[in-house]
Image 1: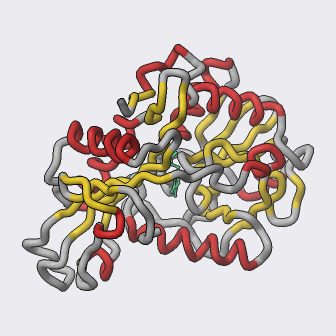
Image 2: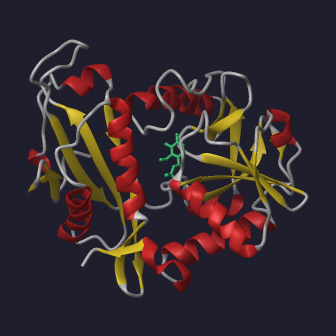
Length: 305
Ligand code: PMP
């Protein structure tokens, strides 16, 4: 990742990609307290546009607030940094990664007098699990690693440290031959994937876990809006692992994963064993929306020009 051409917005300035470096005693590298976002820009008929930029920036600031970290920029400055990172790297479609982290001014968990640094990088990143996964669906496994309790790492924050748990779960799932993990909350109810929210469909109704043990996903919120507009009922509730086994359809949502169908859980086929009709409808509506083909939510697309 480090050895490439381009520029990265680093503490208010664009710096050459290879020079966007930090010291080995960077505090966040040791203790994992950093907050970040994953944002996507799409190539619409009106040019390259960032999807739900304001929602992502708001969540970045909320994450920092939860962690007691003060971002030394305004939301407008971060929005501009995201637009500039796409534009100045000449990207038509992009994955954008804003990150706020503590510098190397001191060590120890007291963490006083540390500087908060902010970077925004942008690069091309295609379908997170491959194009085929978007049509055929993926195979997932319930993880032996439990998702965070609401009172441990603060599940409303998209924090760097929270992803140790995601990585443990994903490594385990992949080693067992699956594509992704399904994590359960500390009480054993379905929480989310390692980097996605989860939905199931049963008898024409969509179900998704309440936002307790899972991240308050922006794609999740978008899907709830689209489902409402398509007249598909949605219920947010506790979901058990075996409810997923007997669902008609299941899918993951996320900025990176977009709308990815799930065709198998714990070696049990879900529904017809590939993308189901409700998933397909929502996936199409999602791609139409992000690609600027749905005038109803034009305010969710921010041009990079
Ligand atoms: N859960 C986790 C753990 C994630 O990392 C992500 C990706 N940010 C999501 C859910 C989906 O969130 P969003 O739709 O905002 O990308």
